[in-house]
Image (cartoon, rainbow, N blue to C red; front, side, top):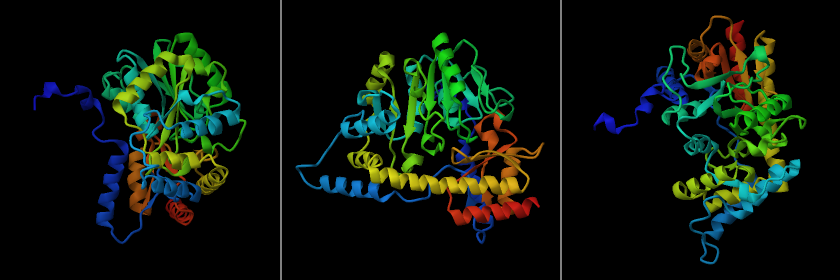
Length: 403
């Protein structure tokens, strides 16, 4: 095949996606040590089953698909009204935020939406991302040719990096005024920290001043335990004029294998809303009826009670990890309003070297911080999605290694 036919920007990406590289390392270790149980506190996948309210809704929907009178084929690309109305009521009206169903677009995952949204913007738009942060924000813009050339320090020449570290309380400063797309993630993946109201007010005001769009990833909002903290960027005055919000059922309701999410584009951004509608109706056939009925069940009283119980169990794991590492004398962040613990490594230790050491000595898997950006070097992410007993065993092994 003639190389001129291919998108050259793919050659500017790292050789493998972060979690693919980790999976290869785990597979090689298991081949060498088949007798050892590997405890995975790395990739952010859930382990608890779907709650009964969701399963019951799925069964009812399957039964509907079995008869001619209630069978459904193609659904609306932007989502069935019953789910969009449930989202508007359960996510927004419950917080006194006025978001209508017409502003909500149901999809098969926030990862897809966060990557696909950049299609609506010019390749010339400069992008700002937190550092460290979820790799898809950067990689999708590299693929689109918006990131520029890779630099020796792991950054890209046209990307604006907003430092989010312990020295600034994980609160990014506004990027340069030539920025047009500002990615935010709160609670943050990987640091597990939350943006304050003051930070978001400053960034929303700044985005309006420089005519930028904020792309706000709220995939972990249901893990916030303090109602005084911001769950939706639309709690900030003026945000509807400049912000798109992404939500997912993956971590809040265990839908990682079921696939359902939604994106909100307010009517105040009508041109963008219409473009996204056009994009979805052209490139997307919608989420299955069965899955959407399952997602709607999350907002029922029983669904809410049951999913919150699961979230509490994961946050109990987070507390176990956080306190266990602190008792060993380590500095950690996160784990209070998110299922991620951001472990600061001893000075001079590279995060991928520590990954290899932890796997070799403890058969425990985490995620190297450098995989989330240059600002993640020297840190290590652990997740709280594991089994409580295995989580405690992982901490016991880590404590023995670091004694």
